[in-house]
Structures are given as C-alpha cells and as structure tokens.
Amino acid sequence: MNKPELLAPAGSFEKAKEAFIYGADAVYCGTGALSLRSRAEVDNDELAKTIEYAHSLGKKVYATINIYAPDNVYGDIKSQVEMLNKLAVDAIIASDGGVIDVIKEVAPDIPIHISTQANTLSSNSAKFWYKNGASRVILSREMNKEEIKNLINNIPQGLETEIFIHGAICWAYSGRCYLSDFLANRNANLGDCAQSCRWAYNVYLEEKNNPGNIMPFETDDNGTYVLSSKDLCLIRSIPEIIQMGVTSLKIEGRLKSEYYVASVVNAYRNAIDDYIKDPESYDYKKYLKELEKVKTRGLTEFFFEDKNNKDYQEYEGKQYNPEYEYGAQVLEYNEDKSIIKIGNKLTVGDKMEILIPNKIEVEEFTINKMWDTETEKEIETINPGKLGQSIKIHLPIKCEEGWMIRRKK
Image (tube, rainbow, N blue to C red; front, side, top):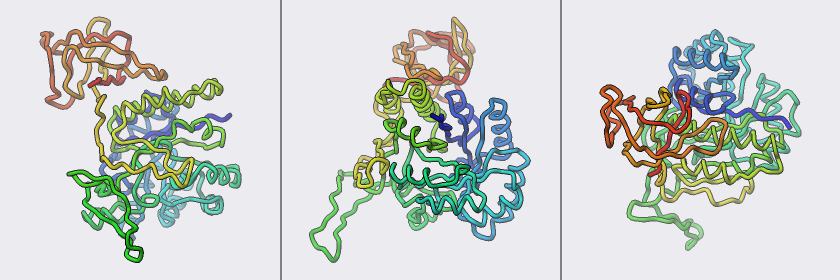
C-alpha cells in the first residue's frame, strides 16, 4: 500500500504552520488576484516564508494560478511564475491552457497540477493534460469511486491523481459559477466569489411544461438555503481511497481558520496512518467524531459512493457549531503557568480539549484558574478584546507552541 499525500489549505503562513504541526505533507496557497481565493491572498514575502519553512521540514508547497485568465492579466501571470520559479515552489496549480503554456515557457522545471476547475472526468482528458505537460490532475468532484478507479487504471504511470476528501462543495459544476457575478458583480472564476449560494432565498419552482411537478423545499421564516450544499466528508472511505491508489488527498478551506485547518488535518492524518498500520482495525467513527466537533454545516459523501445521492443540500444554512468552538492556541508551555492566545470568551469552569498532533484522542481538562499575563492577577473570565490577547492557565500535559485548544459550549 502506498501512503497518499495529505494536502491542506494555507490561506496564510500561520495556517500553513498549523497544517504542518498537525501532519500535512503539503499545503496549497493562493497568489493574490491570480487564484480562485483572492480573499485568501498570500503576498510574495509570506509565500517565500511559507516555502522556506515547508522545505526545512521536508514538506511541499503548491501555488495556485487557477483563474480563467483574460489577456490583460498575462503580464502579471508571467511575473508571478518567474517569482515562483525563484522561490522553488513545488508545483503550480492551473486550469487555463494559456496559463499552462506560460508556465511551461517561463518555468519548464516546475511541475504543473491541473486544477479541479478544468473538470477532468476521464482518462482521455487526463492523458491530454499529461501530453501537455501536467504531472498531476486534480479530479472533478462530480466523479464517483468507480469512475476514479477506472481513470487511475487507464492513465500513464507517471501521472499523479488528486481528489478532494473534505470541505465545502461549490453549487456550480466544478466551480464554474456565474451566480456571484450576476448578483454581486463579483466573478467567481476570477477568485472573488461572494458565495451567493449560501444566501437565504424565498423561492418556488415549478416546471412550466409539467404543471404540478414542484421541487420540495424545506423553508422557514428566513427562507430556504436550497442552493447551499453540505460539506464533503470522505472519512468513511479512506481505506478504499488508499487502495485505489490516489496520489494526494486534498482538504478544502483556504478561507477557514487555523483552528479548522488543525482539527481537520489531524483527523485525516490519524485516519490515514492508522489504516496503513492496521487495516483490519480501521474504524472511521472516531475520526468522524472529531470532524463533527469542527463542522459548521452538515456532512455528505456527495457523489463518491452514488451518483444518484440526494443527501447533499444544506437547508438550514448553518455557519456555526452548536457544541464546540475554538478556545485558544498555545504560545508557551510552562509546567506551572502556560501562556495561551485566546480565540473566544473563556471563563473559570470551562470544559476544554487539547488537540494533540498524531493522536486522535484529545486531552480534556477544566479551567480552574486563569491569570493576567502581565500582572499575574487572577481573573474569572476574559473576552478576546484585541487580536492576539493572551492569558496564563495551567495545562494538564506538556504542549508545544501552536497546539490548539477547543472549548465545549
């Protein structure tokens, strides 16, 4: 069995650090206005720092230039590719044939990964990209497992494959959406999606030529979120995915928090490693339990098991977790009083959980005392009044800088 790469999102250098702390083999990040997450922009200095840090750990960084590019941005694309070449980025993710030609011309030694935006659905399409310089294809999320198996079995041995295993699913086919552009004048294909599919709508649909054929909507006083999907979660299928030989398993979420990245990466890291060590004992439920603690919408396997699956609509439009939330991040461990950076309101008596890298079980504890970092005065409760505010508490186990602590509501 070949162990697949675990690929995590990095909307910032700090998110990349958390991804690596909790077990990611590689991260992918944007390049400003030239990627499909322009609001998760990583500037050149931060990108350089991310690549240097990753390489010091023996890890990889992939940069995205995956917009569908008009002629007026090709000067910027060429400059970006030149910069990425100097930084020795490990691959560039692209979908536009013109962009791919620029990469091949300016930086022929940088591997090219074909974005899921290119909608690779078949071995024939994969072979086309391979002949045109691709070293990896990121497969369409609309494929089921049989189609993925067939593709892997019918492509050149040197061509890698990557699939999404967790995260938000775009309402539109392979992310090619114009709803945001139409409603908010923000072009999703140029990286500025307003996520219009997540809005609440008051709608009623009836096919004109078939009166009475009404799509059933679940609705309340706030309308319906019928365009919004649940989040992808393939934790149950990790054994089958590994067996079919997928090269890289990708987590979506460059706009998500450091806490989210750490939690999800840790769950999948443990799932992959535990299955490789002992396939017969794999039990997805304990990893799913951890993912449930950080989810903000329902979870679905989308089309992986069944192309006829209908359980992927998120009618409630949830954007929060009712049971758990981010609590704090460890800044400095001391046996008596450790320094933590708070992320939400904390109060003496709160039930907390420490996320331990390379371990799926968490360390539970209760906050018995808190101290002001500067005055050492005891405090009963604290709100995150300013970014980076810290306090001192006693931690029950030895922790490293960057470890995450969640709070049970």
